[in-house]
Length: 320
Image 1: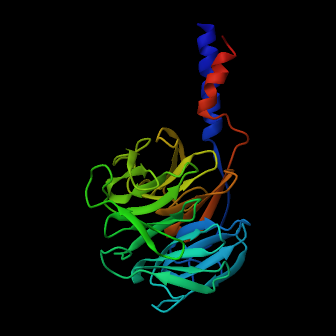
Image 2: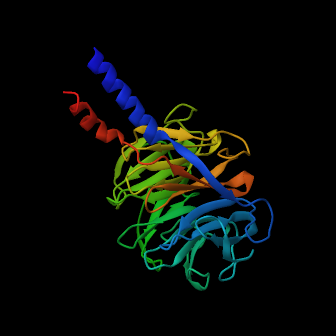
Image 3: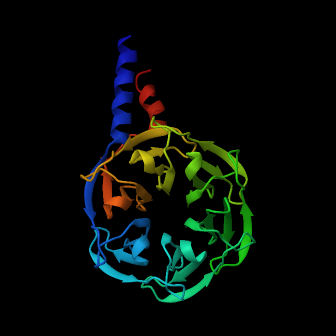
């Protein structure tokens, strides 16, 4: 009996250690000046660590050092090259270019890391390479870009210059169907994870769109969502999801097992008001969150070093 209690205690401590994410810092407030936001949404980082944020209602992209010092910006309201109508997603390709999903203009635009226009594709419609409002996007390690085609309830993916490759999904609640695919992320094994906003769940697929699994339902319990929004995957294979309606981050294994959560409604440190997207640093040690209605970015760090749940078998073995 004593052995069982010791094992249980060690397991509880290990799980708690993994679950501890701490507020580290923030930047931004409401406005149009440098470093201010009017609805920050998509967030990603360059290979060197600079953070890029889609500033939705200011119709621009801003970028910062990893701790939030302002570096630059580009964009204004419009439909010309380098102009935006509510840019929601921003993502980096391995070639160093920045891709922005231009929601209101139904297109993807891409730029150098300093914002020089390089190209674009897309228009309003339901054909291949057409969109009806775009959410986020993500890159595979092999160079393809996956795009959330919100209004058409499907995923499309393309070459890095916009040549159409494939699509999947339709309107509905079944496996592989969507009711507002919001953001996506690609795991190291190539599988594609998509937040299904109004179906309150996460679905994941092979790189070609074959359904693999799902988790989540509407609610406020562990593993439940009120509008699943942004998503990020860390180097250790942890899936972080912005649970917008519950004003919190939840995180999971790649198969959807619940691991932990943090956050609540508010404007204090570590609190959120309709958080939008989440980015996990390359090392997995820091998580950035775009806190949309508080018009800021917050970032968090993990208590070092954690014992992951899959390591608990080794802990048990010590007591045999």
